[in-house]
Amino acid sequence: MKKVALFAVLFSMMTISAKAQWFDFSQNRMDVSIGLNLGMVGYHFNGEIDKTYNDLGFGVSFSLVGLYLDFIYQSPEHKWGNKITPDMYHDHTALTINLGYKIPVLPWLNFTPLIGYSNETTGWTDCSTVNVDYESHSIYHDYDVENRYNHFNYGAGLSVKPISWLEIGGVCTSHAVYGNLSVNLMKLKK
Image (tube, rainbow, N blue to C red; front, side, top):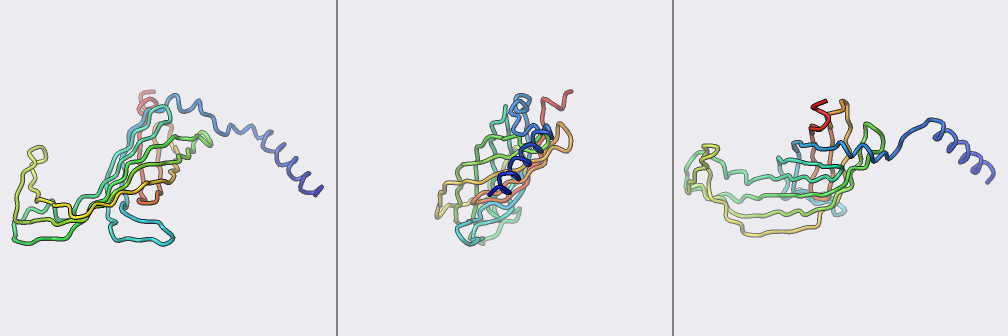
């Protein structure tokens, strides 16, 4: 028991003498960032991995004074086809929206616990229909939702700052795994 107590005292003295500034929340005052997400969305982590509805998704993230919000979505595989055929395809979508708070562990490392919402849909893409998206000048087909599954989403993110204005991170939640690249707008102008 004396060895454990001695080890604890020596370890605490070592960390105090290192002058590490763990959990310096003043870093969040200069945090206004926007980023892009890319990864797999639609997983289920309930004891084992269910990949029924997962696919590549794209999204965005935003943070303001430590408050973090992100979004990632994958659209039906055949929705954006440019060929008109009488085919019908069984497709699916997946979406997650997360909210969290960045905890600055070290000046270059953030940990972000997340909670949010996730859903998956299954349905049919009708390739005989044609719609035009005038903003992107692209053709898309109708996707009719057959089933919708709603979930509570939870997880965590970890990000590093190789440069003061750039953050590279990863997020793992119960329904998605993706990477994030963010730019801190407040530190970019310095």
